[in-house]
Image (cartoon, rainbow, N blue to C red; front, side, top):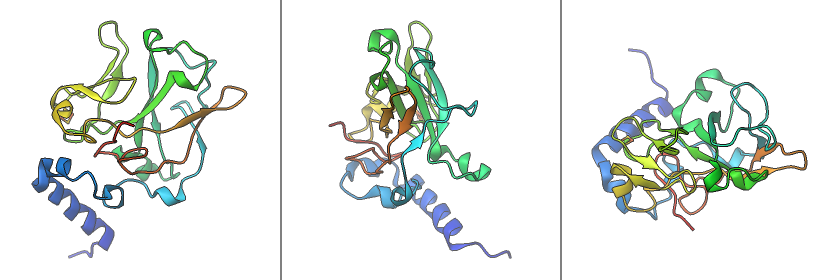
Length: 199
Ligand code: FES
């Protein structure tokens, strides 16, 4: 039988445990989940550009209002690792009615795409009458302004498991957008797949 590396084994065991534990996680907000969830290692993170799927850096002067793209954070340069769901974020420019026409960083949000219910990937829908994040699995819906679920099963979970992990963004003098180093804890950027306390 081929040997399995300890990290593969422990991650698989962890995922099994998650299945068994179910919503029990919701009732343990003070455990440092960032250490146990498959979140990236925050200790190694630096300020990095927001790189769009076309390879360009996002800029406040060119990114369309009421529009979203998938970004990867943190990028490793390894194609397989960079495909992990836990590295995928919806980078959103808010619709005009939520302030998205301002040519500064306040128009932008970046939320983890891992739905807080059972970890399907949600995405932003810009169509009239939607303009919200929607999860295809069980219908959780997320407010693009805050990252908090307002409908579906994720909205019924206790904080922090009703609000998505979020990246902090910064714009430089030329309008280029950057991601500030994330701290994956419920009281800071939040924990991917677990949630974030709203301050
Ligand atoms: S996994 Fe998203 S609503 Fe269930």
